[in-house]
Image (cartoon, rainbow, N blue to C red; front, top):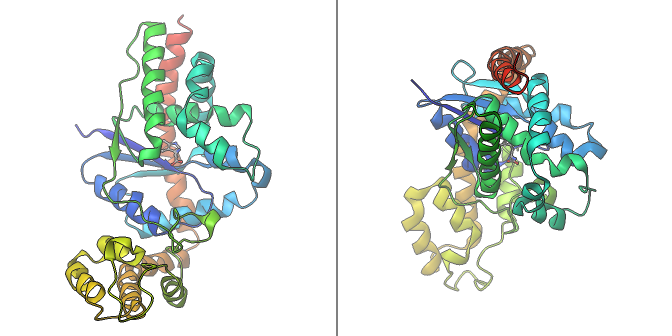
Length: 327
Ligand code: TRP
């Protein structure tokens, strides 16, 4: 029997290279081994973007297109929009009744977000419960494992605690423990060397046309000590090198020599990287264009995903209700 994995992504902007190497490549690979359930978690997006929710709808279909273009296969995986399966909200509500406030208030990811994100008011009742909804996502499908980034580990821990608390309170093993599957790829930085993020406007998007990719790579920050082409550079201090590591590991030896022996300047080195990125993006963008030619395709995939997801979610929720309100 194949195990189930669940993961979700918030539709808050265009997908970029960080999503590709940090999540989607991994998600695609996992389809061989597991029953995969991948959700476009629009309620989680809404929790942070409730003041500016209009663009979310567009990001949802964009996200679905990018997922398929990167290799998520709707024949093998369940792909759907969280808000189209209301069972998420129902289980979230039930869990919220039994989750102690202290667990949520001491969550390091929550505390960090309150500190870092100042452009929006996140001091809300709903946002405190963000990980409770995430627990409901995972447990509705009784997922055994959850592919995520390291920043999400506290949420997986909380999911386990909620599952155990539920089982303990109602003396029935409805939910099992879930494990995190961490991606090994190092975090890709943005073109300015900060964390890649749409809010920093430093990302290379999966849908960027070739001239945009080239221009963004041209702007990338390299070893600040390498001022002239004749100065030897330090690859480990260079963001361009870290991209080569991820996208063209076969060239690393060459790139190291160009740089440390000052054989090639940064401009040439970046042009080479841009070519590698374009080669990686070409099949994705072709698939993207193909998907966009058929207007019915993405809505049909999401509708089918909704149907399959809801059937599983409904079953779990019925089980939960029988346990909390036995006849
Ligand atoms: N919190 C996750 C993130 O920001 C998104 C998410 C929501 C998720 N529900 C999930 C991830 C369930 C894994 C499993 O990346």
